[in-house]
Length: 277
Image 1 (cartoon, rainbow, N blue to C red):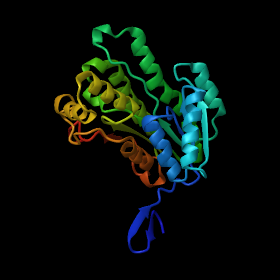
Image 2: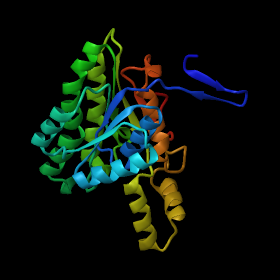
Image 3: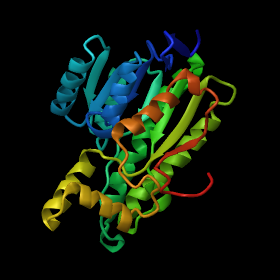
């Protein structure tokens, strides 16, 4: 009965119509990428994950397979700083209906200490990964008249913390690439969108909270509360978002139900970047 299915009289669930769609998620052995993989598997999609090493990919595959024993799963290792490994990855990937450009690295340092190689490294991984993958799969999506590309940017694209200038630059560049690619989909069933997650409780954030708690003799809860009262004061959520909260929005944008959303930059930032749009 369309996108809604009634379960008696007590509740209604939404079917995102992702059964049988093939999704590739770069940088998906942990954090937001791993949560996206789980969310897509839960909707019946065929999922291909990616990590920097075979060890990380195998570990993630084992975890996902145990949770989704009937799920269709593959994984490929590739370091997105290495062009030859990226080309090898692309060579082995099947047809992809959904491309999630999630891989990202960052370095926090004062502007005057950030060297050229730090800027180039972050641009190579964060921006060129999505450029190369989209260049490969967008034409095939257009030919098939259906596809979804989602760029995972960041609230830092708008907030631009002074110690993360290079990272913020890459996240803003991703928005421009996404916007430009969307113009190529006019009149088709293909969409290209980006999302801007805010402060999210990824593995890195967990380590940050643990380190700060140990260093300052506070609890993790106290460190988190202080972060939002002293650093990310613009947040309306006033807590870290969970990786699942971010993944749910991305899963919807990956689905046929999001067909009227194209060329958009969707905030999942808990209100931290402000503004009407």
